[in-house]
Image (tube, rainbow, N blue to C red; front, side):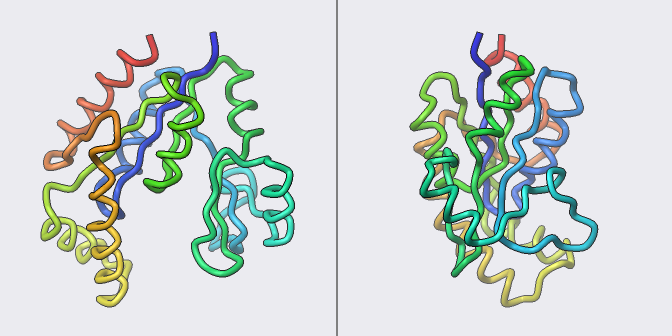
Length: 187
């Protein structure tokens, strides 16, 4: 049977990565799809672990060769995307594939894979709570928080196009809800 694809998208600070990491640890025959990027590694990031690090020219060559199932140029020469070979690699192991991608990337994957893909949107309980979470993280400047909140408002407008929206107003409840939905989907 062909691998199923579980795609998570959310505004920054909604809890998407925490939920995805929880699901991976639950032993649900899921493997995380590692994205490709043309940005340089940060800190201790390693090629093939956090990302596949490509040069902008290599990234563009792979776009021209139709090697991505989705990609985006976030700003000049800084690309992010999902390699077709990554989906094939995980599928060949007999595992289902879990993605942590932006909303446009998620919609593009769903468009290509149809019923084999489940598109899940993780929403914050509200914009004010999202701003509080981003502020409490202590990782962004006030200007960056303003940009993330503005982007979140834009991303929230796509939620109705997703198969399911989970509002993360209680992290444990959101994890349980995601787990139940994924178990049902991959059976």
